[in-house]
Amino acid sequence: MNKRNKIFLMLCGLAALAAGVSSCGYRAGGYKPGALEGKETAFVEVFTNHTIQPLLSSQTTAAVCDMLQRDGTYKLASPQKADFIIRGNINNITRSSLRTNPYDSYLSSEVQLTVQMSYQVIDRRSGKVLMRGSVSGAGSNLSTTGNVQGAVDNALNSAAIRAAEALVTNLTMP
Image (tube, rainbow, N blue to C red; front, top):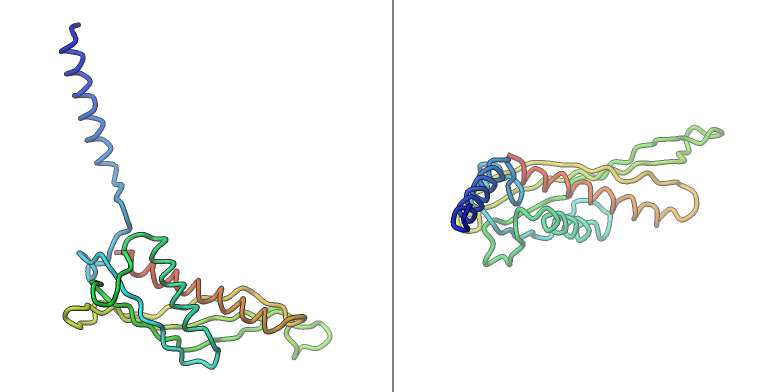
């Protein structure tokens, strides 16, 4: 076999390999719902906090930005350059007793915090609402002994991260 035939066979093999890999269903970045098809950049407004818990709006906004960056489907942009804007509200925090004190049934020894929030995805150019929804995230369990405020802060931060994951999942699933 001469050199020319070897090169031709090698190129045919590479073309077949490229065709095979391209048909495997892999797609760079996440999938997008129909309302966000063609959108590439997002701006996340600071979430409005309708609870009495301080700093929760900044924690939630940061968590949504972080999840968008980790997912990679959309790039973060300034409000003037973004294709769409995410506007959210933190509506409620629910406390649920998971375990009570064996000697006092009114005293919880473990509590779970759940953050409920709603959001809108707005086209920056037209102002049209592209999507809307609500999500929630349950915070890590906390013990009501010791540093209670630190445990509450950690549980709320965890709940905000889980709610942000749910929101970004809604933006990246068809």
